[in-house]
Amino acid sequence: ETSNSRERSGFRPTQTRKTQGERKSAGYWKDIGNIEKEIRNQWVSVKVSIPSDQPPPIPNESLLNYRNDIRNAIYQIGGREVLSAEMNGAFLVPGKWKEASETVWVKEVIANDKFLDPEVPPLSPQQAKTKREDSMGTTESRHRKRWIQTSARKQKGFWRSEEVVIDELYKYLSNRRNARGLPAVWMPRGNELNDAGRNDLHQAIARFGGSNAICKKAGLIPSREWHYMEGLYELMIELKAYSDEFFDGNYSLFPTVYTLDEQGYERLKSLIGYFGGQKFVAQRLGMTHVSSKEDGTDNQTEQISYGKFDLDFGIDLLEFVRQESMKKNPPLKFPIIAMPTFRDFLRSDDEEAVKLDSKIDEYGGYENVARRMGLAYAPNSPQ
Image 1: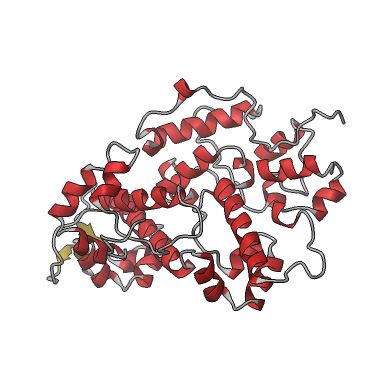
Image 2 (image 1 turned 120 degrees about the horizontal axis):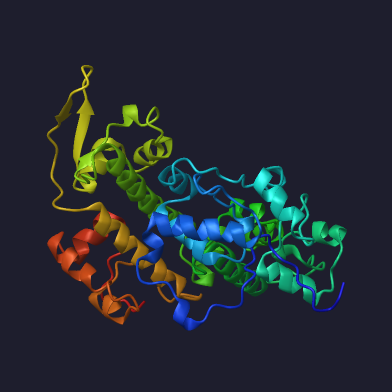
């Protein structure tokens, strides 16, 4: 191979870097049609033709190594399964690379790209950089260094102090932010580290006091807190999708869990159970629960009112919190997921953010909304 050859993902853009003038307009990635168009164009860019009357297959994580914009858009929509439903049942490329490589589309990608191997996942940008720096070019080497985080096995005695552990944890979190679009201030769970091939880091954390101790010393937000927020965000995304499909976009009505399985909303049913059941969730989100009678008629049940609320506002608020978290680097002085203040909205690059302030006043004020969204209320703590 020549020295200037490139190790590519099957979805690495073939065009030159986009200029500043080509940035997408505000709200572009919230439109399903735009996401579908971008996914279709990306398949075309790697010489895979998709019939115009069929939705394009939704790529897995490996295929999106170089398309964080598409990856983030899919996340904001609610995940690949939600996007598939919105795109008329678009095929989901399997997450495991070996299974993905057996699909007709990925086979074509591999056939068109000499750098791809059906047995080994494509390299991310960070992995490719590490590979070039280490002069690794063989398939066997790629098997040995499958993940960037394990590109070089640590020598005996490497994990000599908690400072070393925290430094390695920071490096992992920085790579994760680039590759998966997750904030670098969110503490990973042990199973996440194992799945990413970083069982060495997982074991080192356990050796030096465990996840809670290292999380506190590293100034990170505990995994239980950010998983809770991500789950609540997903719950509202799922409820909105369900309301669009079955309630004609009436976001004030709450479904009954007994019909969710047969309607294809198993994930929504699971999330409702996790967050306290249909009655409590409906009250929390200011929705009216609808119970299905045996004769098929609907009846609105009486319930305690927690005040006005709407799903769009809740989704926008948690999106803002998440985007602000993406800008932060560890260690945090106050490692909490806090309710934004009016100053935070004013400082934001998002011109629409300040409009959230008026909605917060409408829905009971900052402290009330913080409690409802599970956010810490700390108006005087610098973020």
